[in-house]
Each structure stands twice: as C-alpha cells, then as structure tokens.
Amino acid sequence: MGPHPAVAAIRLAVRRTLHDVLSASAPQAGQVAAAGTATHPADPTAAAPAAAAPAAAAPAASAPTAPTAAPAEPLPPLVLVACSGGADSMALASALAFEAPRLGVRAGGVTVDHGLQAGSAERAEDVAGRLTGLGLDPVESVAVRIGRTSTGPEAAAREARYAALDEVAERYGAAAVLLGHTRDDQAETVLLGLARGSGTRSLSGMAAVSGPQGRYRRPFLGVDRQTTRKACMVQSLPVWDDPHNTDPAYTRSRVRHEALPALEKALGKGVIEALARTAQLSRDDADALDAWTDDAERAVLRTPQQAASPEDTYETAPGPRVEEMPETAPGPRVEEMPETAPGPRSEADPVAVPGSQAGSDAAAGAVARAVAAQPGDPVAGSDVRVELDVARLYALPPAVRRRVLRRAAIEAGSPAGSLFARHIEEMDRLLTAWRGQRALNLPGRVEVARQGGRLVVRHGSPN
Image 1 (tube, rainbow, N blue to C red):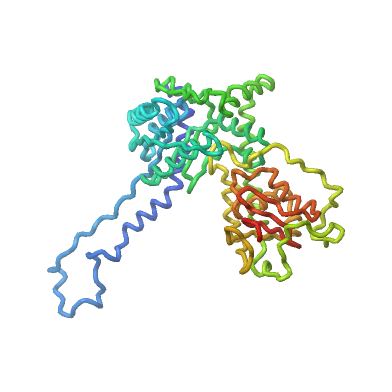
Image 2: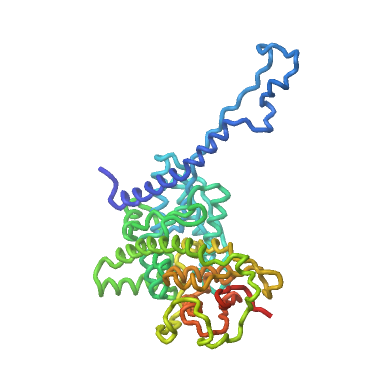
C-alpha cells in the first residue's frame, strides 16, 4: 500500500524539483571532477620536464616515487528548505527529507526568526529541532531585525528574510533553496496584481525558479494548500499557524479569507486554479515580450556618436507650438489620442517575492549600455543618461515600447518599487501626444525630456 495521496503529491512535486537541481548541478560537478585530475601548478610533487633533468640522473627504479593523490569526489549538491513551521513549509521539509537520500542529494533546513511576535525566538528553535528530527543537516535558525520602511512591514520582513536565506545559502554553497508557496499563494498574488492594475509581469505571479543562478525553487505552485495541510496531518507533523495570516490588517490576509471565498461563492469552485493558470499564461507572454524588448532596446538606444550632436539642447521650458514641430513619428494627431487618466497607483512588481520580477526589472541591466553624459553636460548626481530614438521608439507596439521606457527610467536611477503605471504612461505621452510639454519628474530625481528626435532620461535636473 502506497502513501496517502496528499503525501504522494508533495513528494512527487519535490522529486521533480530535485531532478531539475541535479540536472543543473551536473555540469558543475563535471568541472570539479575534471579539475581534480589536473596537476596544480604549485604542486611540489609535479614531475619536472624531461629536458630539465640533470644528465647523470639516477635510475628510475631507485628514484623515490611520490604518492599520487586520487582526484577528490565532488560532494552531492546541497538543497535547503526554508521553513516557518507552517503546514506548507513543514510538508515541504518532510518531502525533501524523504526524497533527497533516494536521489543522492544532501538536504538541510533554515528557519528565520523575524522577531515580530513574543516568543518568536523559542518558536524558531523549536522549528529547527523539528527539521533536525526529520534528518535534515545542516539546520540553522537565523534571527533578523525588521527596520521601518516606507513599503510596510510585510515587504520589510520579506526583504530581511530573503537576505538571510541568501547569506546561509552562500555560506554553505547550497545549490537551491526550496520555498513552500502553494497554488493558493499564486492565486492571491495574481488577484493582488489585478487589484493594483499591474501589467503582465505582475499577473505572472511567482516563478517556479527565481533568484541568483536559479537559487529559489517553488515545488508546490501546482499543489493546493489543503493538500499540504492534509499531508502534515497524516504524517503527524506538528504545524504552527502564524496569527499574521489571519490578521485583517494585512492585505494578503484579507484576500485569502475574504476576497477569494467571495469570488468562489459568486463564480463557483475553480477560481484559484483559474488564477494560477492565468499566472502561467501571463508569464509566458511576459517572457516573450521581454525578449522582444531586448531586441527593440538595441534598436532605439542612441549611441555616444549620435548623442554628441551639437544642435542638441536640454529643453525644460515648454517647447515650440505643435504646429511648428517637425514630424518625428507617423502617429495619430493629438486630438485623436484617447486621454490616459493616471488611475490608481499600481505597482508593476510582483507582490510576493522581491526578485520574482525576473523579467523586465531584472533585465533593466541591459540598459547599462546607455549613453554616458558628454563633457559639460549639466547632470546632478550621476554621469549616466539614457537616450532613445523617438521615431523608432514610437513605431514599437505599446507593450514593448513601455517596457523600454520602464527600463530606461530604472537605469537612470528611478526605484523600481516607486515607479508606477501612471509614470510610464506620462513618459509614453511624450511620444504619442507631444505638444511641447515640460520635462517629467520621476521618483528618484529622474527627469525625462524630449529633445528633438531624442527622449532623454537622466538623473537630476540641469542647471
């Protein structure tokens, strides 16, 4: 008789993830093994070249033979599980403890004490003891301090948690860190993105693989929360229910206990599965758009030679009347353009995990090829500006064009978390509804101005 269906489901999900980790680690292991067979340049036992040997050398049979060290076998990859003690992460830890030895993988665990509740340190130590009891090694309990931030306690705690997980993973050389986010968490993330009016990247939710070198992996994105809880129950695993998860002061808690149940009551069962499916479809679309944006960005980015045109001046006052402006793009007349209301503030970043926005924001580094300021340019606080060709930029589809604009703003110094859809819309209006507007001011003291055939995005304001 096999395991309970819930236990079988979580083990299968973890097994698939471990296979992926092993596949990703195989080339590195091969490199280590190959390196072990080579003689180190500083090895005192390395044989001298024959040409350098003295003429009256002793017979080979009488020469002492240095022992040859066998090449060191590379250690199996280490996979850590991040565990809070809740049902999702405890189910994940139990599945990792079961599957890892069978696949030749080392398995450890880490729990993070955020210090936000009384007795949190004792609770973290208790979770660490449970992980050790499952056979995981190494196991660490890490305490973090949550400072005051403008993004709120949830985001601050998340940032501190991932910083702690990164530190532990790097110290142990872990190949992966498993996170217990479930299909329900994914649905909540998509719904939060919809409520904020976010773009495709936010609607794609959490990635199955994210972080530096694909460190973070989420095996349970196809497993619902009820299954993980059932798996813990049939395995007699004690779980801890964080009271923050039911506190209506937190937005995600209200989505979990009020919004999603109301949607299921009104629309019927299957809302969570549909939202999770939307996340995957949106991720596929966002990845394709980002790849397109990479190519488009190279086409619209001005080179230093193009940027050095002597007739370019930095206009911050209203420009000439639109009747006097030369046509730079074959777009519709301003009168024909629909008005774009600023609308609600809507982040373009995933709300679940920093760095899970692996698409457009992570790719913003591609704009690092942006034009450096020319000598004499009045730039305050930075020597980088991004210059984009207006005509080529206008010709792009809106979804691609706005991605290029967002990347340019981030590269110039605008914080990604403070850059909302309304900011990108106003940047876009400098292309699609140009009437000689003044320069735009974006978060992070970034200024955007149209100069003839260029859109210039730079940090600070000119004197």
